[in-house]
Amino acid sequence: MNEDTSRYAEEYLKFALNKQPEKAISLLEELADTKKLSLMELFDILTVAQQQVSCDPHGVITLADEHYRTDVTLKAIDALSKKFPVSGKKDNGSALIANLIEREHHTVGLRMFAEILKAEGWKVDYLASPMNAASLFKRMEESSEKFDLACCTVTMKSNLEELKNALQKLRANPSTAESTIVVGSPLFSDQNLVDKMTDQESGRPVADFLAKDFDDGLEFIRSRKN
Ligand code: B12
Image 1 (cartoon, protein in one colour):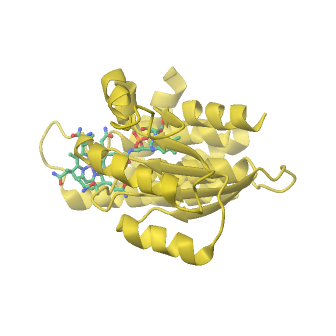
Image 2 (cartoon, protein in one colour):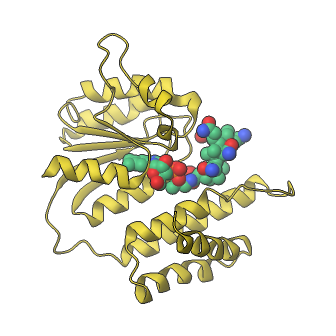
Image 3 (cartoon, helix red, strand yellow):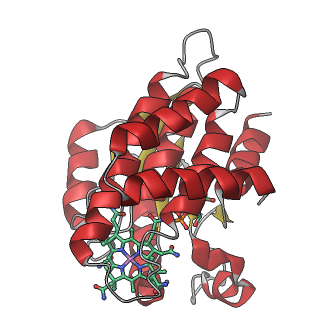
């Protein structure tokens, strides 16, 4: 993380903490206009800020505060995405961006990555609300759409086993059987956890790529298109 990213994240968070969402969002919009920051750079600022929304040395932050700040971030993602139109970009294919784990409520990373892919020219089907994976697979079967790419996320260590099961089902589903599968998670900075993401019977990785951050994921996806 560079110095500017952490400084802007601090400024953004100060507004979000003081319940001034308009100022928080304008700050980022101005950075896009005046400093010509890219969508990825702006999302890096939001990521750093978001990772601190529950830091509380005095023990006074409530769950309501955490939800409020996350809500400001979701509004900021919306506002910034509108500033980066997709028109003129090549058509990369169709991508399913889904949360496969019902007990996984951390979805901000997935939301940002959906916008990054749209800006790259992907047609995105975004289903990030925590839901029963069986409902998602049923919906996919009914739509009979075939996805070129499927991306999902996980944050809680305790959800890794469930994710492995869900990914096996994703591989078996006609809509995603041929898809490139990418899973993003802060947990994948830990190589031990990456190593655990293999199918025990076949010994093969459960996804085509495990990304520790957006850059990592996007680089892999771009490399598959070239
Ligand atoms: C906001 C937040 C919440 C919100 C989530 C709201 C929402 N709509 O997402 C709420 C309040 C619901 C919540 C609840 C809980 N949370 Co919480 N939460 C956070 C917090 C503060 C920020 C998470 C976030 O939004 N990050 C912003 C995103 C953009 O960052 P990111 O996910 O790290 O994404 C980066 C990479 O991982 C990767 N990436 C992520 N997804 C994807 C997807 C793709 C495709 C790609 C390519 C890349 C990618 O790229 C991103 C950028 O480089 C973190 C603190 C932290 N330090 O992370 C705790 C944290 C994640 N929560 C934690 C915990 C423990 C909980 C609760 C159990 C608390 C409780 N006692 O109830 C519950 C569990 C809820 C559940 N069942 O899932 C722990 C997780 C520990 C762990 N890993 O097991 C953390 C780390 C806090 C802590 N320090 O203990 N939480």
